[in-house]
Length: 268
Image: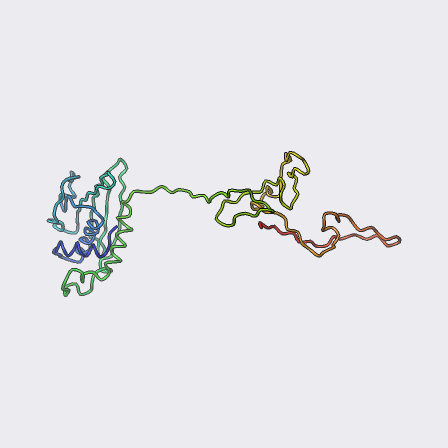
């Protein structure tokens, strides 16, 4: 990627002659490619010809603004053993400079384009400046726009990868709580050791072949279990109290409404 400091240094060292504001932006595009590690192999008519000199030796900037309303640059770069050849053409469209680029390698050539409003990045009194750095009022913004709009698209695409959290090295249950956040959630095996006796517990069935447990219900988070709580001594709450209270002799029969008991899922 290019930086505003290096781009400004390239412009100063090249000492180009500018005819108009569009020349200044077009040369900043060129300086950004040099700052990103490319070297120039053709300019102007040679770069935009039907048979551009791809892969030739490095050349100077002579003829870079010889065309009216158009600029041509041909670049090359070798990175990680692979050679890149990029053709860049800039067109004047009113107050804008349209930048078009094309990768010249591979069967599927990938074009890219960017439009820059010239006056957004140039000094208002460009004719009264003392050095090249003063020509641009927002070189950082211009280089940032060129980086993301052009240069970043020339970088090799990195395939996305899925990163999974680590798996805890031990079985978690009510007796031995989980390791906390950052680990892959895991259901308890419900085969004894914790405070809950479920249908898979070997104390009931011996082999643990009975399928199903609280942790396997749809919509229940992994490792969840019931945390029942309510007023102490309420009939129907403690497992041994799942029965109606006997009617007193002679008392009228009436419907028995069980007390409201709140059950809550917890992953503690």
